[in-house]
Length: 68
Image 1 (cartoon, rainbow, N blue to C red):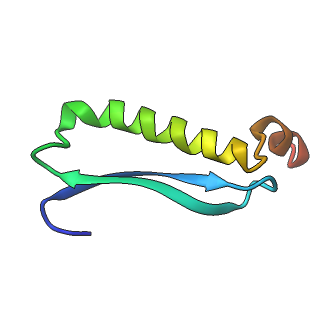
Image 2 (tube, rainbow, N blue to C red):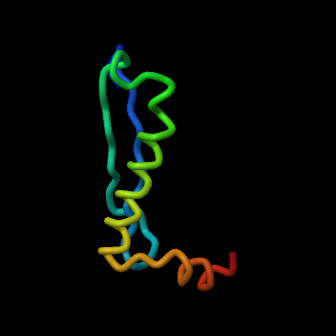
Image 3 (tube, helix red, strand yellow):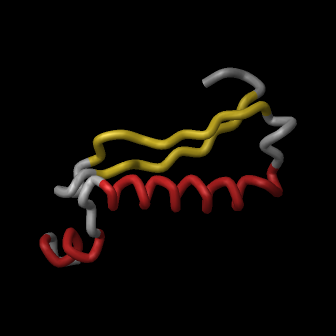
């Protein structure tokens, strides 16, 4: 939380679905302009999903387990 910066983050989950970490991208507002944010969000979410899957996270299994 520094003035003049923006950040985008996504959770990284373990095989139980517990958040064990996060992936964050931080940059100056001059480089993280409004029109770039949707792309940054997509990339960060995909990278966090891949990291979670490497830890054994399977969203389909978790959803079945908790009846979503």
